[in-house]
Length: 370
Image 1 (cartoon, rainbow, N blue to C red):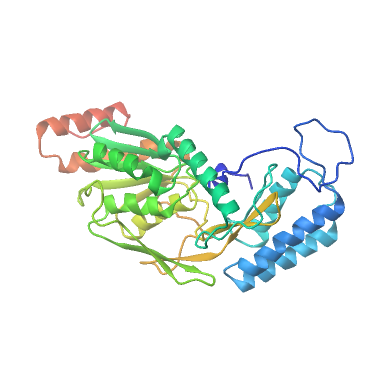
Image 2: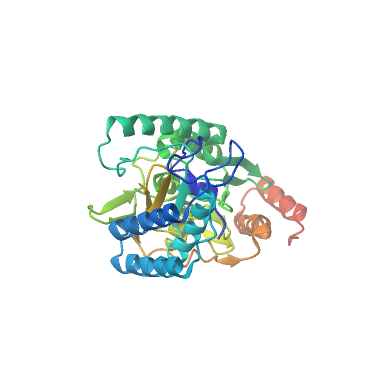
């Protein structure tokens, strides 16, 4: 399992110098991480296990993950790892596999972190508040540089809208840009939303886009948290960009790297028969993770909630979103564009529109019937 950058979006941690308390048994470059001694490595693994046991939404899955991790520890699977970054990478892979949840992730920070980082809904100490404020500002700047997760907004041939979403950043930073993109595309006759490679982020942003595409305010899902009341997610009322026409066809492009909040957008539209999914099955991560400190340099993200979709009463966890039109991801855009144009050709009423649609089909090598 590759490490995906979206898993770092919640953390956005500073990288600093060597960590105190870790053994430095061999010479290293000044910017190299410290060398982990066996005792320290075991302590870190035990800390990860403790957080999983305490915080995982499913006691059964927590027990299974702990059993597998202890088996690996006893077998010596970690004995050769002395680099803390490598340990974080391997633990991420093992926790996701053993815990059967793609939202497991371990992160190493060279700069010391507050040991009393709160859960997202808990009050923070002054030290933690300062750290979280700095992290918030870094996130804001990062989202701005990345155009708030919006890769492209385009009118394709035949008046088909194209919205390329590369991530789903925090809606409080992204909402205005998302609404602007939706307004630009509102006059198109069909829409393609490209989520290939989108690693997710904030489900509230998914709900914002859904509010544009669904005919009324809609209950999207519930999150069943461990030790916390159920949390419902609805589309906004009213949606900030109005509503895209109910009679306009929508296509969603996906691949194996479409993950989490991006999967929600595809899953919900498919479940409500509002869009057709084109491409490859998505990654399959539905349950939200919460970042929990293990010590001053390691954080583990543990799935503390379970997602239950309002329509299906289940989720895409572990199974992904299956495409309605299964094609290689590289062919998904052309496939969706041709499908949209073919549908528009059948219902075009104005000669100019029909001519434009047929010209677009010809340019894609799809051919038309007079």
